[in-house]
View 1 (cartoon, rainbow, N blue to C red):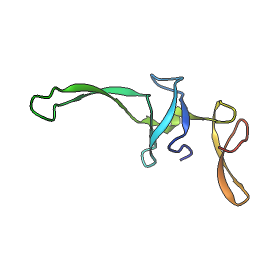
View 2 (tube, rainbow, N blue to C red; view 1 turned 180 degrees about the vertical axis):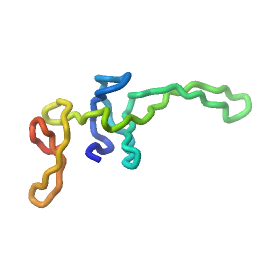
View 3 (cartoon, rainbow, N blue to C red; view 1 turned 30 degrees about the vertical axis):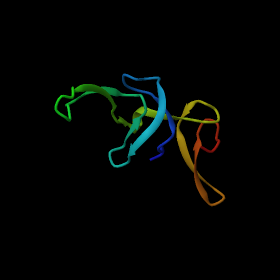
View 4 (cartoon, rainbow, N blue to C red; view 1 turned 90 degrees about the vertical axis):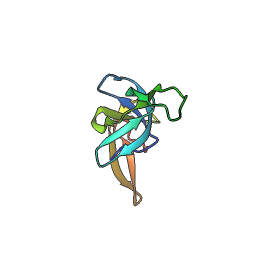
Length: 101
């Protein structure tokens, strides 16, 4: 997968289109990732102890990798990611400005 945990991404499709955020979790088997503060849903939590009240919590749900693009740190634009071998080291690079990520 070309996007890793800690990368900044821009949402291209869905209800949060245009928003940017940091990747929290990546699921390579399912091709999904969770972005901080994006794709939030409300979850009702039951009380754990007697006398405690239940509450509604906002939880970030995973998005499909095809719906996001990596934001390049050098040019600041959302772009596709490529791989290249430079001095026997495999690295990711921005397809717009050709700089290493």
